[in-house]
Length: 419
Image 1 (tube, helix red, strand yellow):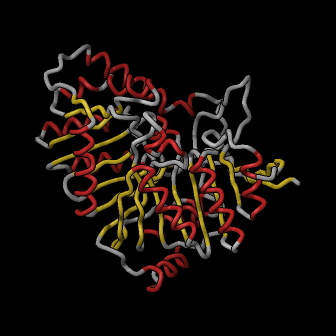
Image 2 (spheres, rainbow, N blue to C red):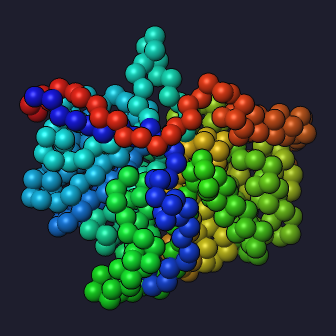
Image 3 (cartoon, rainbow, N blue to C red):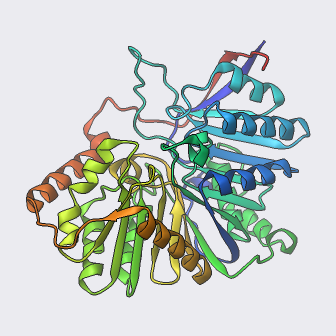
């Protein structure tokens, strides 16, 4: 038996002009809960999936056929078999090793499986490196949403060993879920209501009653209308910082504007801490970040390297209210090429909780770069870093052989094996 698995090859919003340029504002009255690592994230997500009654929308960069992937597969199959509409969007690079049997079992149960920009290997290597679907979003029954940096793989659990990743996500309930739901529907190619009809539906008291005090705003980057939204959100928050800034980011190699705002915040007396990878899963990430250390240290930025295990988080906080959690690193891939999504959060309680967790990380499992570290060719490093970043940033426009990624859905036939 052959089952169809849809392939998406697009980094653009759907054709419908009414939803093409999605721009979400702040939503009040939300409850936001920090979920640290797979130990907190997977049980909460799986509980919500098992309780789903109408709809599951799931996007992830990586799904592996390990104990986490197989548990997710079983839950989604059970949901689809009891009549829940299940749409799963996977990245063609991050999920390129999934077997036809694994995907076919989902499709056979009625799960709509979509693959973003798939490509077969050439000479044993994957060539679809750029413009990845890097978002990690789950929305259940349009009532609860999860967003962050955690993939569906066992390497987000402590029992994976020394290579287990340190990471973060959030669970959101309240009016902001309507924005995440609308966004996930539009990006998956599903039919969505017009903005007017969607807003009326969003405001139904039974479904969208306030859940807490938190203000939440969904932001994202694509390669069409929202290329710089996440970067601009960081820059704006940093420019307003008065007391403290903490950024924990796995792949740190931002452009000059963002670096300048970090440095300027420290210069005006803000306590700025960066938590970088000290035990990287990609050595190049550590080497790239270290090119920027001297430029930042000389103006008072405190830099910690997390050494217990690979850092995979993409979180930040400014002062005692503003925070962000999501999928976007601060490197050229995330800021210039990948499809990403973060939430901005204005909530003092959440901000304090995130701050306390990052402080434990910084002072328990990190080494701190010395303040009096002797600058080593910092100007040369900054110049090279500037050039490397902007070459990467404009790489798609400079290379005509990269695909244009026009929106299309293409059926893919694969054999189904009994599991």
